[in-house]
Length: 122
Image: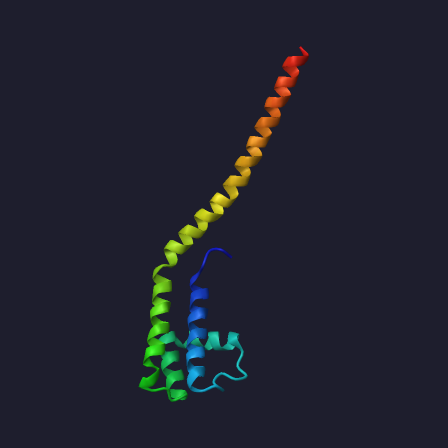
């Protein structure tokens, strides 16, 4: 869950495109399931799907700024994916290492107390 993947980024991009289309046609994608929209977009290819959606809902050059923004966000997210994944793995490792170190320290402390109590009794 902490580690981002390409499918999540693609889903976010597709739904950003659908929101951009809804700005021009409020009833766009009405009654369509998000899963079906994602399946159609990934089967056609994203560039082809976006072009088809723009022509279907007659979004001309006035939509260029919004679609360019979505494209830039998508490319930025994909380019930083490897770094985000590496950071997620490191966070998980540190989140595991800290409690394990604490348990080891507690065990060492209990053992030190036991050895001290035995030395006093002898």
